[in-house]
Image 1 (cartoon, rainbow, N blue to C red):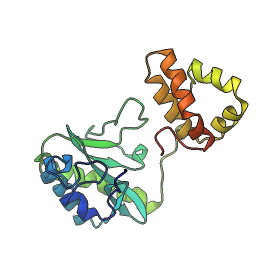
Image 2 (image 1 turned 90 degrees about the vertical axis):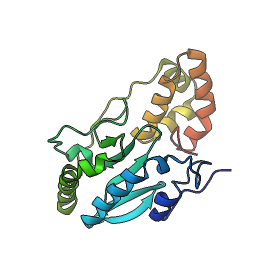
Image 3 (image 1 turned 60 degrees about the horizontal axis):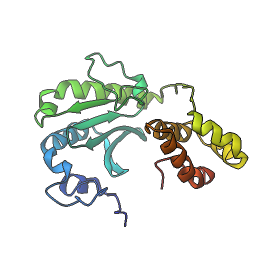
Image 4 (image 1 turned 120 degrees about the vertical axis):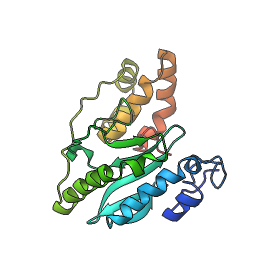
Amino acid sequence: MARAMITDPDDYFTKGCGRCDKFETPDCVTRRWLGGLTHLRAICADLGLTETAKWGHPVYMHNGRNLVILGAFRDDFRLSFFNAGLMTDPEGILRKKGPNTQTADMISFNNNTQPADMKHIIRAYITEAMGYAQAGIKAEKKQVEIVLPDELTAALDADPELAEAFFDLTPGRQRSYVINLNGAKQSPTRVARIARFRDKIIAGKGALER
């Protein structure tokens, strides 16, 4: 049974995100990084951002727009920026979340003292983002060509209903399937995944959607 994600940001700092069975236990990764996360929260509060909870994480808003989101993982915790394509990154500290991320959008920490040590830099970055939100400026979306795996191309050619549904998906949802399929080393595995994904594609969902 899926656990409901938190809707109160206070719960994130006292219990966790609610995404897994480690919620409200000492093993929750938010416990490991609580000191650093709490300091990031204080920086956001001091700048007057509006705190809410979305997707099981604390999100900080300005001028009605999502600005930054906090996240905790086994090896690090992060402050990630929405509309990161606008950021100038003068200190060169923004990192990409993974190889499929288009824009460097996060500051990653692996020590609870780092947010305090970097307080003035973090404040400057958030203040820059606040300026864009205040002005209503958004980053231009990059158009990235989606190269379909051979197995998916063959499946779409053989199944017109599947092809119509797939090409009706948003580019992001199409990419979610391509990324998932490219993660399989063997062709038979990709073929099996396509068969398993068929109902979700027909339903207009992405690979990670329930």
